[in-house]
Length: 248
Image (tube, rainbow, N blue to C red):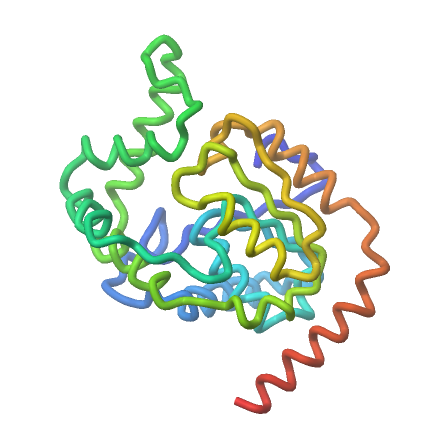
């Protein structure tokens, strides 16, 4: 966020169960977290803003945009959960459960998400920063370690992808061990507003840590584009979204 131009006001909310937000035992379904996001945006009184989302936050952002297509100008998905959701294997689920109390395992898991980060100890600032990440992750609500995986197991918006007609940028690190190339490509093909997939070389699941300068540049270049031609398409998406809501 510090690398973005001063003219851009960036707000990064702590999602439920993390950071300074409430450490609740429940409420981690994607729809519920999208409601959290909607309440925040309502309080901020934002309209025509740019939405940037990473990892499981991508599902929350997609859920929000489907419900509020008139408010979001552009959508940027960074190594996002694909539209089809994500199924967590049993062995991975058990590891997530173990991470609640096993700091070393948690650190190993986080390190695997950012393979290009030098944690050998030669760069003390990077190592110190990584340790802060681990400490922050340890403070997550106990339920959040597995509840988010549970939520993504049965979240699937592939059938509504055609409604995402706002300008969409999809970024993906080619060393991501969580989201594979095939899944992110299916998301690209399902979203009419997504023109291309930008691959970040030698980056894993966390390009904001591994390639922050490139990521900030890509986001900035994207949101300052003139998307006037998208206005008519966006109106169609809003009308279809409202019709779906009336039908339900």
